[in-house]
Length: 307
Length: 252
View 1 (cartoon, chains in turn blue, green):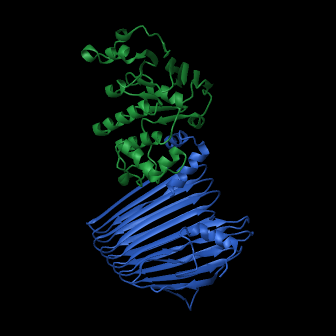
View 2 (cartoon, rainbow over the protein chains, first blue to last red):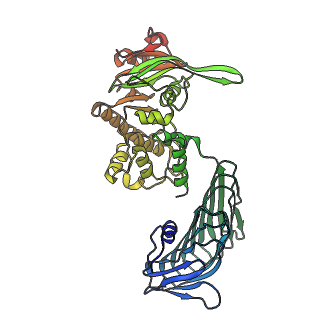
């Protein structure tokens, strides 16, 4: 299917590995499934009872990718989608999601992606999700993702999310239950500017013995934007977790970081750290000693920090 | 190459003017290696920062190849050809060593060039290139990366502020060889701030700064006996030991 220039441009931004209409993929456009394809080990089925898809990933999948981007290119669209992922025991898969809004009107454009992952024993999943907004309109771009993850014994899940820019409001909710020996890595990157607001609430329950979680959030807040992070690691068994929240605050922005740790077992080892501060002057001086202007140095520091 | 005239730096503290460095005069010729030494707190690093534009001089002039760079900003001085290795380099979350070297060079360096740069400061490229310049690196490792960033590009003048600080003996030995190489083979102009005898002995000339002023300046044969002479007496402790240099130093 031929895609227009705006869609291709948005896809390029939200899918760094390159969206192609081959293998397993599903493109959702202005609230409708536009095109989709299956691969030998990954089957995508449209839900009958509500908007969204079920993605079935076979245990035979080895390093395969499935791309399921969402593009909203029309002002005034509100899109709620329910995607469920069934990942069989032993599968190894990369799921590239993400939503880009091109809003050239004066109405709100909104996408709520409600994703549930059922991850089988010893399966390995990397889930990448980029959020991005653009357009010359005055309408607000809103993204409210909900992510629910169930990890069976020995499963490994990497949740790599990034809000690049242009999203006026986001409320992210992430909920994880972990089985024995399972492992979770969360890397959450966020940039807000202007008068944008972002809230991220996360609860990770380490229920199985030997489970471990590493939760890292890095954010930059500019303008008069507001950010709130509230990751909570709950240790219900012998487990290890580390929460690290780092934020760069600029201009008149506000960042609230509330890492919470909740041990309910004597063998739970959970650590948290949080830091909020302005751009380090020494970093600026160092990059300026390479010949960069202060503005160039600042941009490099932010880009690296959120990389 | 570099001509420093009456360089003075003052700060106001609690309403009182404090002079950190006063009337510093010296020159560094093309391809020359000048080592600045002296006691802690004497003003050596301040002079280096004034030369690079990290601090703004209260009075005096700095000429680079005859051009007055006193009013130039830090980045303008970098673009004018001055390279600078900070005494305490910062950590960068999310920045790999490879990216920092590329930024320092102003272009994407081939893998083998990055490897050579890290090897020259005693680091194994395979192990380090894609590591972040963050708190997981020790102070000594960050310091070696810092020196590599200056070596990543050719400069008219390279300033190293205590390059030996925090570096283990083995790496220090390699570093001395590297300075020797860039001085003797590449004929680059170097200004090193150092307390290390091995580095001081490599100098074409030595500038001793004490209490914010030039205490002594001259060739190694003139200054070294005072610094490391009988009883290893230091010129900066006994000014008379190397006396008679006044407040300036030229290399003519």
